Amino acid sequence: MQTDVDPRSLIGRKAFDRNGARIGTVDEVYLDDATGAPEWAAVRTGLFSRDAFVPLAPSTLVGETLSVPYDRALIKDAPDFGVGRHLSPEQELQLYHHYGLDLSAPDPSPPEDRSFGRLAGGDPGTAPAAGGD
Image 1 (cartoon, rainbow, N blue to C red):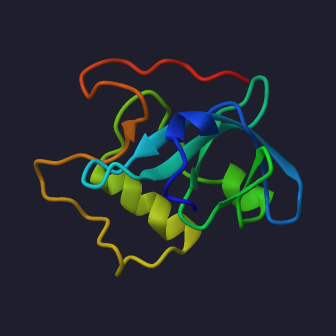
Image 2 (image 1 turned 60 degrees about the vertical axis):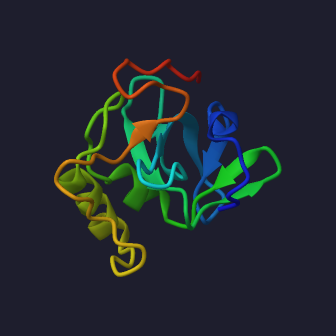
């Protein structure tokens, strides 16, 4: 994904799978604590449904939408960790495995005293502002 994109600008965008099927709307964006780069998006998959985490690195912006290069079924089956808090290194590892992402570059396992998945626009110690659907 483009690295010059403001992560907050992703919130509210419609997300589509690799076949063009609508997944939902980007609800929150999680940043890598080490680099500050957008790493994961939580996509609200329906009115009464949950948020599914999708990786941003292989995803692309197409016009005003986020195109995620995975099937809708795989995305909806992603581990559910809830939203609004940091992803632990173990949770992030589960997501990497779920999507079959290469773990060798960059190394997704942080040192024990660092956490990944800070919310875009939020202070590390505060609750996130909700994105809209």
